[in-house]
Amino acid sequence: MRIDIEDLSVEVAGARLVQDIRLHAAPGQVVGLVGPNGSGKSSLLRCVYRALRPAAGAVRLDGEDLHGMDAQAGARLLAALPQESSAEFDFSVAEVVAMGRLPHRRGAIGRASAEDGRICERALDRVGATHLTDRSFLTLSGGEKQRVLVARALAQQPRVLVLDEPTNHLDIAQQLEVLALVRSLGPTVLVALHDLNLAARHCDVLYVIAGGRIVASGPPHDVLSPDLLAEIFGVRAHRVRHPRTGAVQLLFDRLTDDVRPIEQTNR
Ligand SMILES: Nc1ncnc2c1ncn2[C@@H]1O[C@H](COP(=O)(O)OP(=O)(O)OP(=O)(O)O)[C@@H](O)[C@H]1O
Image (tube, rainbow, N blue to C red; front, side, top):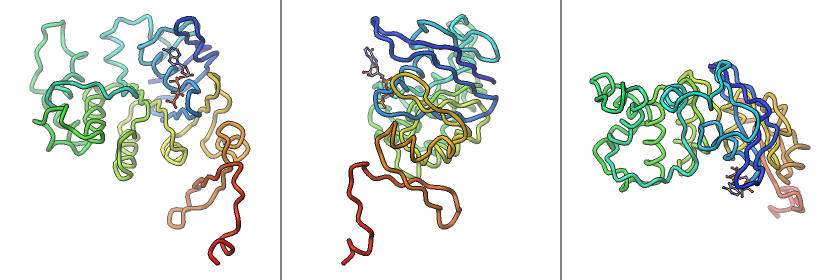
């Protein structure tokens, strides 16, 4: 499903948090949003998953205005993993994942079907969390909670997935697993990431946001140039090749660091 964000501005209590955003994702693409702290990533994503309404502009899914759809129709198309998903549900893991099926039920009293149950089991299996099924969500570690919330989003079987820092709390193996999983699923994905190497590796296209505006977009390694990284993130970046895969990796120093050659520091 295609996403078109057109001239979008978002305001909260009279403050403009993001402005004139244009962003496009082709069906099945993984589009990354990167930017410094406070640049507007979450505000933009919150508007896409309808926690905020646009002050101007629109978010369109296959041409249809998302904010004009009724809540259930929207939720059948789009699932979100918000950043503030530390929400403390006093429910079992199975119940939390089953919430992902609610938009697909008929009316408020629709019951879960056997098929709903199979979809939830499969979602938990895909994030390697089947063993947590009967645990209370409240008792899980941060990483376990995050995996269960990814499973809930998968159970929703969305055509568009919006993820705000989905690798929060995950160890390095789980970060790679979750992003590879997200890529393999097929929906169009809009994902905010802080780790620029993860973003470059897992996204087809990157948008860079700073001060509430998009300042660059395109293929990851075209966008993440040392000049842009210095200007927007205030870091000195070096590109190196991964010794096994040959993929470009970024290494960072502070712009102000006086970096001495390695031979000197080893003496
Ligand atoms: N409800 C609000 N009221 C006032 N200001 C807000 C509100 N929500 C966000 N902001 C401000 O808007 C700016 C953008 O915040 P946002 O959370 O979108 O940034 P971000 O890029 O996701 O940051 P981070 O990387 O730190 O998560 C920040 O300066 C933030 O303080």
